[in-house]
Length: 55
Image 1 (tube, helix red, strand yellow):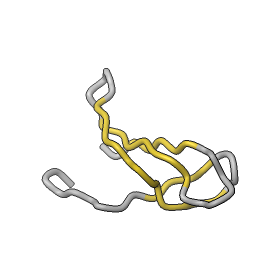
Image 2: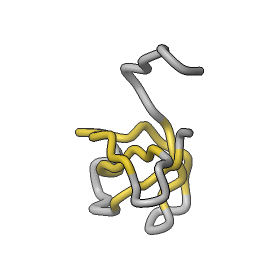
Image 3: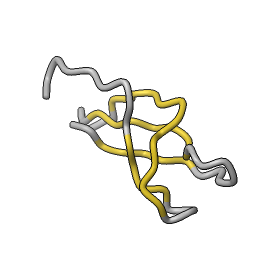
């Protein structure tokens, strides 16, 4: 998966208990060197934040 860029990520929101698209996602490198994507839940009524490890 190196070299590939996804324009859309999906993750599980713990607040509304559904698997949704991650809005306004940003990639971060954690202190252990792994990458993660963090953003907001895409459901209208939910204000949950989603974080997903991608590599």
